[in-house]
Amino acid sequence: MKFPKTLLIIIFGLYLFQSCDSQKNVIDNIPSDKLDETFIISMSDTLKIKLKSNPSTGFTWSINNKIKPKVIKQLSREYVKNEKTADMIGAGGFDIWKFLPVKTGEVFLYFIYSRENGKTNNEKYYKVVVK
Image 1: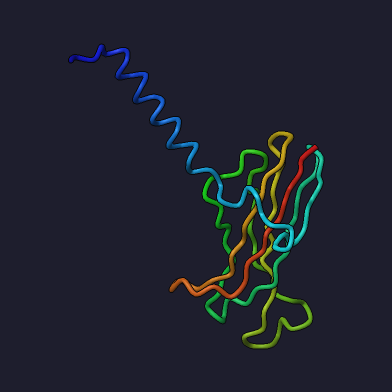
Image 2: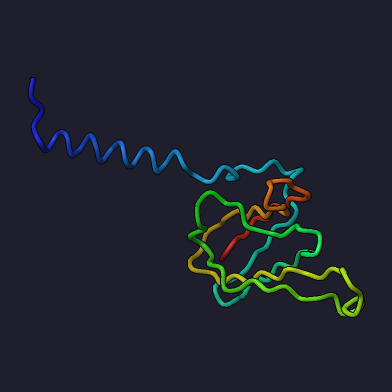
C-alpha cells in the first residue's frame, strides 16, 4: 500500500513534535526537599544568583538544564574573589550569574558544581517565577 505524501508529512511532523516534547527539562517537578530557593521577580528585575566557588580545586559551576529556559535568559556569569581572602593563594570566591526575564511564567534552574571528569561536589535547584 502506498501512503500519500501528505500523510507521511503529518506522521513525520507528529514524530518530531513528540520527540521534542519527550526531551522536556527533567527537573520540572523537583521534590521540595531538593529545592534550594524560589525567586519571584518582575519583568523589570535582574535576577542575581551567587554561588560559592573555588576554581583552584578543579570544580566549576554550570547550569545543567536539558533545555534553555524560555522564561529567563542568562545575561552574564562572572567569578569574583572573596574580598576577605583575595590575597590568599587558592582561596575561593563566588560565581555570580545574572538573568533577565523574557516573559512571565516559571522555570527551574539546576546548577551543578563538578570537575571535567564528571565528579560532582554540589548541586543547587532554584525555581524562578516571573510575574
